[in-house]
Length: 355
Image (cartoon, rainbow, N blue to C red; front, side):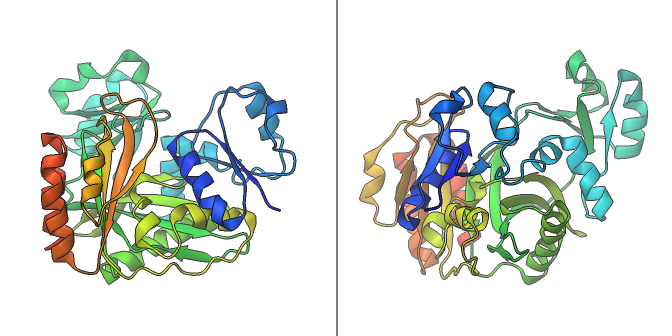
C-alpha cells in the first residue's frame, strides 16, 4: 500500500487526506513541530502543502528522505527572485522586474518600470501580505528591512486574472485543467469561475508556459500558475508548487480533483486528462462564521476547514457546479443575503462571468 506524508497540516493537507481515502492511500498531514519518531515517513512518499518551512528536527529528517518529491524545487519557487530568474531563463512573459537593493535605486526604478511599482518580499509573503503598491512619493512606506529582500515589478494594467492548474507525472506526462478566472480583493482570492472550455489562445499559451516550467524543474505533481490578461497575451504573475486555492472548484466540478491528481502524480498512479462538463464557481470563506443555511441551496457544496475564525483567515469555501449558468447565477443571488455584505461584489463579478 502506498502512503503519503504531507509537510504541513493546514487545509490543503486536510483535503489531500480526504482525496486519498477513496484511493486507499493513507495521507498524513504533519505539523512542522512534530517529532520525527511520531511520523510514519520511512515508507512514505513525502510532499508539502507549503513552499518554505523552518528548520526543525522533523524537516531536517525529511530533507534527507529520498522520496521527498520536489524537495529541491521548493527553494527555487519559494523565493520570488529565483522564480523570476527562472521565467527569464525560459523566455516566459512576466512583468518587467528587478531586485530592489537600496533606497538610492528608486529614481532608476521608476524611470525603468513606470509610475507604479509593485514591491514584493522575496520570501514569506502571501494573500497580499509582504506587498506594497508604491508611487514615487510613497517609497518611505517600505520598511528598511525590505531593501535587498524584495523585488520590484512594473504595475501591470491587466483586464483580468487567470490561473492554470496542471500536473506532471514521473514519466513526464502533463495534464491541465481549463483556465480559471479569479477575483482578488486586498490580495486574497475571493471568487473563481471556470468553464469546460477556456479561451483557446489563452489556454494554449498558458499550457506552453507551464509545461516549460514543469519540464525544466523535472517537477512531479500539481502546480498552479497565476497570470495577468493583457492585450499582448498572458503575463505570469507567480507560481505555487502545490495544490492551489484557485483549483478548489475541481473537487466538485471535475472528474478528478486537483488533490487526487497530485496524489496520483507523486505515487505513480495513472494520470488521465480530467473531464470537465459544466461551469463551476468557487467562493472563498474568509473570516466568516459557519452557516448551515448555505446548504438550503441545492447547488452548494460546503468545504469547511474546522479552523478558528479570524478576520482575513481562509476558513472554508463553497463550490457550485451546474450545466445551466442561469441556475448558477440564481444560486449566487440567493446566497448573497446568507453572507456578509463584503461578499456581494465577488458574487456579482461571478454572475457577470456566467452571463
